[in-house]
Length: 468
Image (cartoon, rainbow, N blue to C red; front, side):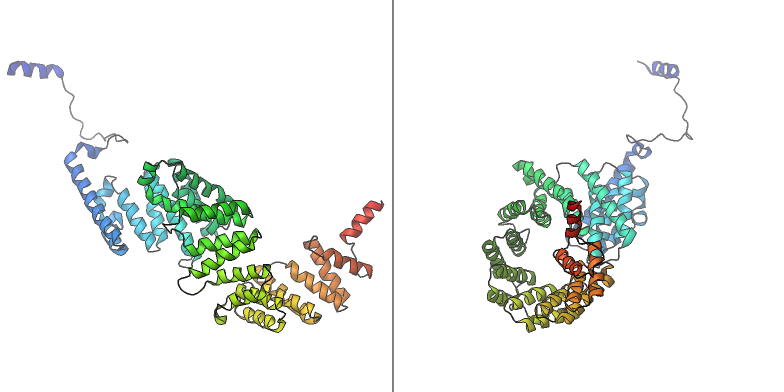
């Protein structure tokens, strides 16, 4: 074809004239910037360079330097924001912000990520984790988060855990973490069980090659076994709990993702509640032996209770004495008092309880109730009633509620002191609040028999109906 032929062909084509003012119609398949490959490649190089520098700082945990490099993204990397290549730097900045407990800022960055990439698993997972981590920090008093903002943060974590799970249904970590959100943050062991079970099921369904590829998730599989055992213990599914804590011990024998101290303590606790006291003793003794520093108070306290259940108060006292007296927490002092009562050293028991009250701003009512029981058995009904009254007042002031046991001991001691008006008043209040309280019916019968009770006892009501 000659030059003149080409020209004739071009004339026949009648190419449309350019429309420079027409706005480009961009969508998810192509953008205006894609028409300029040289600029696009330069921006991608800039992104790779920034991420490479960030990764190096991540390895060294230099979070402030990460932020100096990429945050705020709009200021540090405006050219990437302009062309939509800013999401990875945002997610990295969010992680660094989270490490510095700047959770509000981290969440703001990740919300941008999930809005622009709604099907990206990693962004939803990161957002859920950051919300979850902020709740842990609040529990440890590292940040302030209470009331409605806390509830909203919990809701945010649940929402994005569920989305991450939907995007990767065979995962382990997000099921485990949402289980922890329920169990540790919301104190709801029940809903956590199926999430821990799902995390375990997912890991165990993976073939060996996939497990090697995703080896970092194995630690959360082991943790899920441990936490499931704990949740089952809380819900009193004891045999299942025993199965999973033993499985955790077997799976974690070499890796030590969970401290041996905690694993054997949990094994001891499950056996204690199963009434297998010798097995509980063995596990708890081992936990004490492997303690690298001083014996843990929670292990010693449970071992002391185990010895009490075995009828060995002397050994129980030996265990309590492993803990320095000035460092014993209130719940240890309660068990110490139980041990001393078993040894019939009531004066020392009362002293231990009174010392615990001095430093207990949360649960002093439990010590007061023990004191009330001791004084009652010693025939000191006025002292016993006083301690029951202290317990009732403390509980109401601290928790704004009625304490059943305190009402019972106030009523019983009033009866023993011949103060029938007070006995009747307290017994009637307890009957309205908890009509099935142990031995309340017996007290009501005694009060009713003397004509001081205006209302019938449950037995009287039942007898009346049968007579009808």
